[in-house]
Amino acid sequence: MSSSSKRITATSSTVIGNELDYAREVLKSGNLNGKGKYSKLCEKWLESFMHGGRAFVVSSCTSALEIAAILADIKPGDEVIVPSYTYVTTVNSFVLRGATPVWVDLDKGMHIDASLIEAAITPKTKAIIPVHYGGIACEMDTIMDIAKRNNLFVCEDAAMACNSTYKGRMLGTIAPVGCISFQEKKNFTAGGQGGALLINDPNLIERAETIYEHGTNRARFIRGEVDRYEWIDLGVNATLTELQASFLYSQLQASRFISIRRLYLWNRYHSALTPLLKRGCIMLPEVPKDITHNANVFWIRVTDPTQRDDLIRHLDHANIEAHPQFMPLHLSPYGQRIGRFSGDDRVTTMAISQILILPLSMIMTNEEQNMVIREIFSFWQPELGDRKFGDSNETRDSETTECS
Image: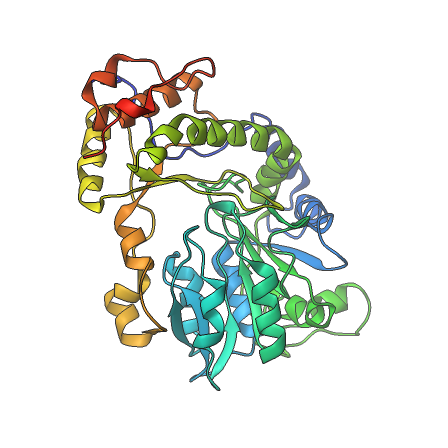
């Protein structure tokens, strides 16, 4: 087994190189608070993917989700349908309004199983929150059809999915409301934290703006539509600073370059590790037809979950960081107190015991990726450890790889 002097981390923040140029302009302008030039440019970029909606850049995806929960008119006793495999803020935002999370099992793609949603609906159900895990879309046609027939609010948690598409539409722009993250681990970052609220239902735009303005009609006052502004609704402080917006805009301008590099690495992993899939060692993500994705993460599922911790230690010994991502919310102490699981847990708990996130970032080199691939192969067959993996002109004898 080989060891690298430089640790290969699971994620690394994207830095393009011209962020300081944009930041200097903001500093010279004197407007650091937000809602200025770069905030508007970021919002215009997002709105170019929308169909007549409105985008708000906000301080975090959590802030966007909190606004979404207010827009959904969530009240104590309401139920929201959500996967258990997600970061806690997906659920917190609705629980803060008094909702009970109803967990629905995953499909093999690590998304909420759309075929199980209808069975989870009760007279108390108010909303569905699909999570586009890894930047790959949930089955949105089915989800939106269920929501329409049952008069339910849908909020897309597209935290990981900026620039991914479902049948030609960017994720976050399909449901009435979508929420995006620009946190440091995402493809595009606002310098550590940041997010966006996408309002795709015109009937929600005015109220969303009011909530975004701390519950006031300040924006209408600035536009000269009212002679004073006052407190008229619930509100939050979700302003993204102008420095953060300038950092984000530099990355959105380079979105094509960032996406090409990440997708190259994602596809390279998939191709190189396919022999282990064929031998039954691992499962790999699949990208359904009519879907594009942004390569936010690359995961494998170790078929035998008892091997995962050993694989993590094996990679760690080679100075490679790999880890599970989310712990199941329905098995957490608080999740057990406030939520309930609908139907059988056939996939979620098993999948969470198998999944492993491999290193992927825009700055990852081909050589670093080769090392990750080589060490994964050598875990199952140590004599492969000295071979070079990941090169496009290489062939492997997958029949020699044993997985037990």
